[in-house]
Amino acid sequence: MVRARQARRGGYRRIAWKGLRMKLLLLFISYAIVLSVALARAGHRSRPASSSGAARLKPTRILIVGATGGTGRQLLRRALERGYEVTALVREPSRLQVDHPRLRVVRGDVLDRNSVELATRGQEAVLCALGHRRYFYPSRILSQGTRNILRAMEAQGVPRLVCETSMGIGDSAGRLGLYFTFFVIPVILPFYFWDKTRQERFIAGSSVEWVIARPGVLTNGDERGSSRHGRRVGSFLSTVRISRADVAEFMLAQLTSDAYLRSAPGVCW
Ligand SMILES: NC(=O)c1ccc[n+]([C@@H]2O[C@H](COP(=O)([O-])OP(=O)(O)OC[C@H]3O[C@@H](n4cnc5c(N)ncnc54)[C@H](OP(=O)(O)O)[C@@H]3O)[C@@H](O)[C@H]2O)c1
Image 1 (cartoon, rainbow, N blue to C red):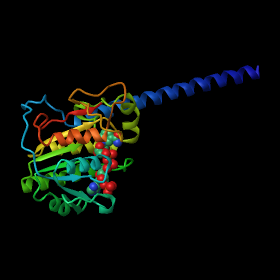
Image 2 (tube, helix red, strand yellow):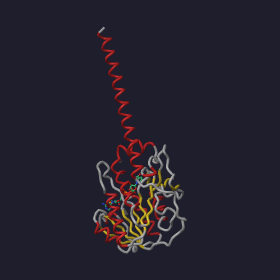
Image 3 (tube, rainbow, N blue to C red):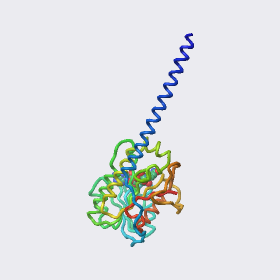
Image 4 (cartoon, rainbow, N blue to C red):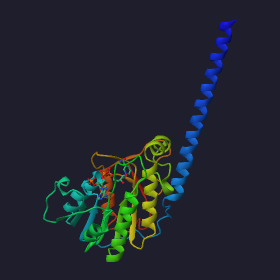
């Protein structure tokens, strides 16, 4: 009799626990969906590219922001190989470990308007591969830093910005695949991605000629030279990737092409 009662109680507890887990799971899925919708609405939404895709004159002097980072290093090496006169805005010059007659290094911080203005002076284009690792609390490094870059560009008449953000926002929401949409972004990167939406809005609201490059998940692999790009690349199911080397190639190509002017193409393998 007692045993039967205990077994019944144990059964009730198991059912209650199962129900609670189910509710928590549904709550989490709802949160991930709401976040994804919010990122879709807050990020930039591209219209189909309306420009002719015509080539344009190659700039000579370019500024790279984030040159000590993964994509930034690829940009720097390739830009020097192509004959650009490069200025790198870096927080710690010793991290750059590149010495080249066409490379000028400016020590500074994107959050410091003076150093951004100094680095931007005399440039014809800016490549921005800004990123950080402060994932777990709200930050404005990407948006405020990019805003400072845009202000300096507008004040000094620097025409073109090519900026790396990420798939997963604006009209690319969900396109990093299920794992990122339902785990990585809602659990690890909500603040980071929210700041990216602000970063994109500042860029889209500026008067410079801009291209936002939204890569899939980045790898340190070799350049394949066969990336897919455009508004509709990416996958709602599986994680899409691309190497930083291929992203750098894509970004450099945007300096001399109007194909994606004022739009935010995704780029992935
Ligand atoms: N990881 C991925 O799978 C993935 C996927 C899609 C998009 N993305 C995005 O792609 C971008 C580049 O990523 P990554 O991994 O190649 O770069 P990264 O290695 O994170 O490098 C970021 C760069 O930004 C610089 N930086 C950070 N804060 C700065 C500040 N206040 N002033 C000046 N420079 C500052 C860093 O300089 P220090 O060396 O001084 O720190 C570094 O050079 C990021 O926005 C990232 O979110 C990443």
